[in-house]
Image: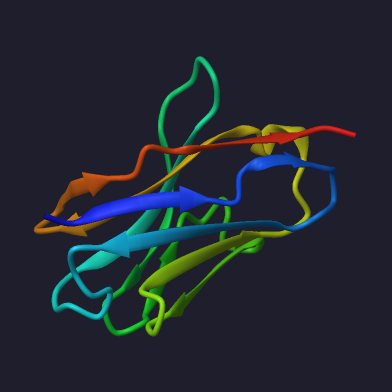
Length: 118
């Protein structure tokens, strides 16, 4: 069973770069055809898809976040990292990583809260 755990949440000041890590266990992040997604949900609002990184490292982003978001991975640690640059209070949300498999989110992390404020 694949398990995911987000880390790195907390307070961030406007204009800084947010960095979150997704620690994966139960499967290698290079397993074909897995893709590893990041999503977020502001309090009281709907879920927003940020993007994903595929098992071979290809990335796809929500067009609204493409200019500020990036993914990286550490295959030795089996981790995926999300970086979001130039954050504003509108980036305050609970951030989730999820396994995307066969056109569905098959496993989710528990989420990590990020608050952007001066």
